[in-house]
Image (cartoon, rainbow, N blue to C red; front, side, top):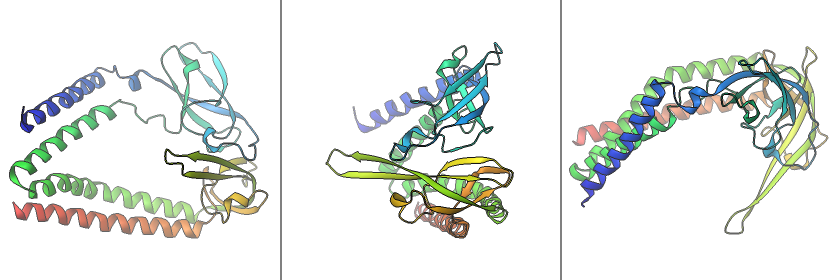
Length: 286
């Protein structure tokens, strides 16, 4: 069987996956669609232990209600319980999802709408089919098809999303400008050490800060940037900038983050120009 045959098999297999996945989504039968999604409430926040692993998240006790039975559950985030909780305070609402009838198999999530239709796998399968067709066209008809096939949709997608990205950037800059500043303190430094297959050791360090908002809410949060010498920062006093509307939006260096957002926007714009230019070169060379 020649490479054309392999391409047919490739497209057939992943095309079938895309069709089956899309059909299940339309019928409301995907795991994501069947999952129960409710809002939980943090009832208690644990004290972080200096030197412990940062991968477990901040220890919390969460309560939620199963809508089908009305039963209340009080649980913790011990073990593998979905997304890591990196900012916590008593009374904060977080998402809880679980299979129907199995509230004890809960997972925490920041975004209850994430994966709501279960189209992630079908969309990726469609991408693989498209990539196979572009590669086949490039082999048969020359490299311009690769440029046009890959960079053309990328450029169109970038141009479509650019206005939204600009609005998001402006909202973020407005949020940074409206942040309140309060004193905080580094109460612990979490550390994780990993050794890869080649014997190289890497250390992941995350300071944990606490601060009290202007309305008296005590917040515990991971602080993965903005601190010099994070490994030796335990006990250090810091100034925390946070959004009054959502204390989970915080930074230790609002000026540096403002520069970062402006720089990222410029990089995105330059990247879009380069991608669009590559697509134009491919179209002209056909």
